[in-house]
Amino acid sequence: MNSLVYLDLSHNNFFGKIPTSMGWLLHLQALLLRNNNLVKGIPFSIRNCTKLVMLDFSQNKLSGSIPDWIGTIEKLQILSLGKNQFFGSLPITVCCLKKIQLLDLSVNNLSGKIPKCINNLTSMTTETKYFDSHTYGLKNGHYIFVMTYDL
Image 1 (cartoon, helix red, strand yellow):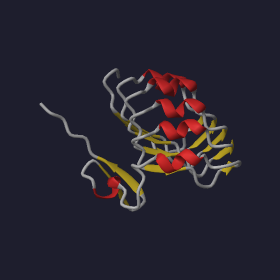
Image 2: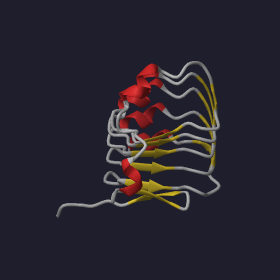
Image 3: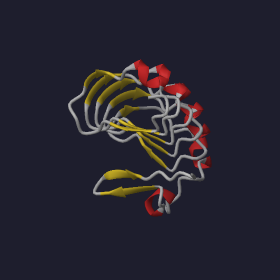
């Protein structure tokens, strides 16, 4: 599993915590656990997955604060944490996600001020690239992820 780049376990009935062992998947570019019954927070070990482009933990029962280290995953283009039970303020480190195109934090219990630096995330525009890109897309409410390799 050292070379695994795409893992989609969405729309199942998985429950419990997100395993810390997922942080060992160092080549992972997409991790989708959408619409399960996962609880607690995002494990610290996920920060080891520095090649992540897409992280979708939406529609679970995850709680706690959004971790400060989320901004260290610099390649993230899609971060979807909506429809969970996250609380507290949005960490300012989210502004380090310079490549972010989709940031979904809807339907949580977040509070406080929205960091002013959010305006500096220039990849998030009204003409978001992921909608018309050959790499990412959205169809019937589900992400489409297409990977290309140079052989």
